[in-house]
Length: 104
Image (cartoon, rainbow, N blue to C red; front, side, top):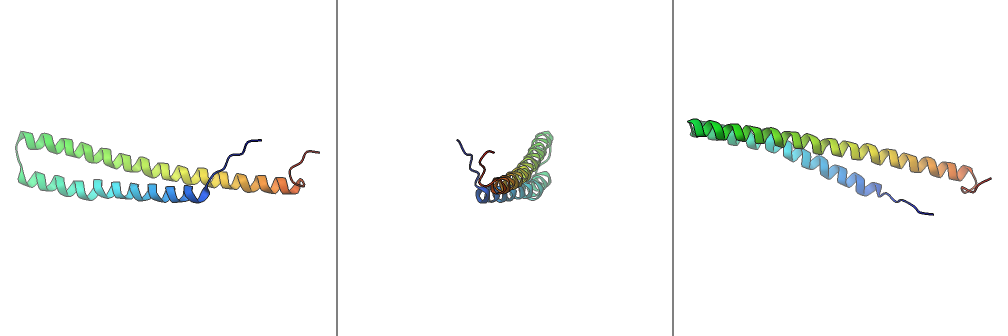
């Protein structure tokens, strides 16, 4: 019989890493990019500046959306990990109540 093993501690660690990455991306989008865009806007004018700033704002939006996606992945990993852990606990309880999992 085959078994599937899931490392719950590793999943929690990866979930925390994903959450950290999401926060870092949000910080880049909300602070670093905003500061950069503001600095460029105050130092550069004209059609090329406007085109560049539009591209920078589009990139800022993409980074923010990616941060949300990474955060959602972290949340889903936590939900799946918790569900698997609970399912494993239930399976152990059932096996224990059946005298070790043997058939009748």
